[in-house]
Image (cartoon, rainbow, N blue to C red):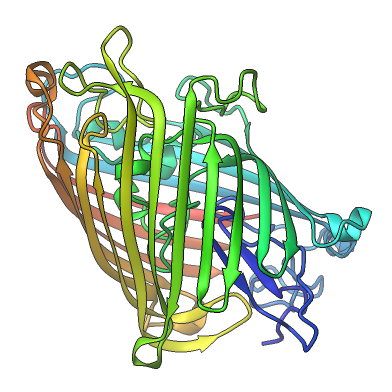
Length: 470
């Protein structure tokens, strides 16, 4: 496979990770951002099969090109060469739940034993500002998203802390089906080989605490939020808001830090009164490892929120609702924190291409939080995933993950009566069939002991996810 000469470094999730890959003796960074918005479709990463363009060679047939719509009679690749790369992805979810919520529950929770369909669209454009206006290595990333069908799919029917079909609840606008919302408008600027800064509107899913085998935004790997990122901090973050930060790549790994407006601004461009409700500050250190001669990484980080959240001694937001709301007219607490750790470690590596290592291995996460107002006191997960040992030439992927959510011990009488919060645990297994470079079909099953013990029974979740890249 020919390595794309433009892919010389990548910004992984913009706020959390950075990798430097010199393509020649002269280490000149390219302006192409990879996964800059926490889960790229076709506007970021080159796909195998049709040359070394992100859109493919116009000579490729429909079964081998990386996108369904191809090269648009040469227009798409011409725009890419000029510095404008388009991408679009439709993800469809058809999931059912046996068990789950089995008693009267406050909205937006619904009853279990249901089967639902949800669709989610992502529309992306990446501007290479070096090519377009001569700004060295500058990059502007824009993404819009919408959903249709049943909001959240069965996520609000299980009684669990972490939404079980999390990407079907994004963007978090339950009353606005079909309407596209601008979730990312992010400017990224490398100032040197050791410093990259970014500012703008950005969605947080896939931004921190990422592992090679369990991360992204739920459209390619696991769909349960607990296996996408740590629920201890993610459920209390806005989905998209204004952020500013920096990433410092090092030979041994990378360091990142960011500041985030705590108000969810899915329905606004930036909005008025930035940081008027508080501030969220986070940082992460990631160290690359080479145990057993195979690649891996270890990362530690922390997030502090100065933002009013419900005091759990008096009430609790409905489990599974994202972003976690503050219950109106009830006492709040202004500060919360989470300290977390994560890792991934390849056990088998088949090959390495311009984008990533190909193989499979272990992943895990752990965290501890304040316990009030954060409803999760601690969290653990462990699993196995990566490129399938079966039909790996086709690009199939798999994952097996376990998660355990330790509930806060500070819930008061009312939330205990309403929801009966308790420790939650679950497992998820998926297999991603890469039918063509632009189409994959993923059967997925989960078993969950939900955290809302007063209103829900153990839940078996089953279904299929279908991704189409345009």
